[in-house]
Length: 391
Image (cartoon, rainbow, N blue to C red; front, side, top):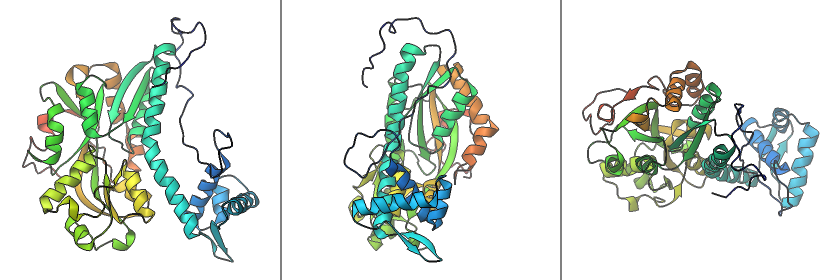
């Protein structure tokens, strides 16, 4: 973390008596397809990528321009200028048939989206770190809820809804693998640890072995966050042909894995064990991405054929999806912390209809049990082996 230099006379000054609203800060990744020219903030090439993505999805440059609030003439001029700079075409216009991306244009879009998928959790964590630094010195009246969690598409919604409900709460949300989050809670580095557990994990399973050292049934409680489905995300042309890791190995398909320590990697390794498939039989087993969207984007770009992820990521990238196993996403907390104001606010949000409506827009998510506080022995599958609870 960088050491922020505050204005003279600020350090040590008593916090303001007014209650501040959300801090006006966000961290984003900006792209430029030109040599570094010192530009900061939104660059013309950020807009270019939005245009290219609009052409890809709508098949029309005019529709893509209209969605961005710009004229067709301006959009076409921007496209032509970048094509001349790069020395190759990005789109092909067809009379009466709209426009399509060239092979290079499509590759450019997929590469940008893959990079963005990697930077999203990093940027979110750095943003929280920066705000936490300001929080400590300038906005001490706000209570901080330190949340370390495995990356999930619904978590930013949770953070927004908590801060919307209470202007007195700042959510310090940082993303890392499930095992790392549990370790952070055990070491007192966070208030809540987010992790996910597939329902096919039993005593001695890969996830059980990975998680058990950090879980304390007498001291910890689980807050249900969401149920989602892990499955195989694959090129649409493979739909109906691939249903297992045995199929992947047999067909010699290019696989893209998740990073070591992630809950999804543990789920993958359990399926390989159950199907008696060796990692060396999976082409690309050692190639890693850090988010569900990262895996989905690489497949959509043609750099891989199949990977494991959630349905919402597959849908977002237009991929085929084969469900493998339902899993529960839990928020682990020390029982003694359940009465703390920030955590009671979080639980209230999880019960709130507005939060649930927003998450319902994500494919494959179920929040009907969100906010329920349960014991580890009543929810984790290695404690309740033989449970017939339906997805």
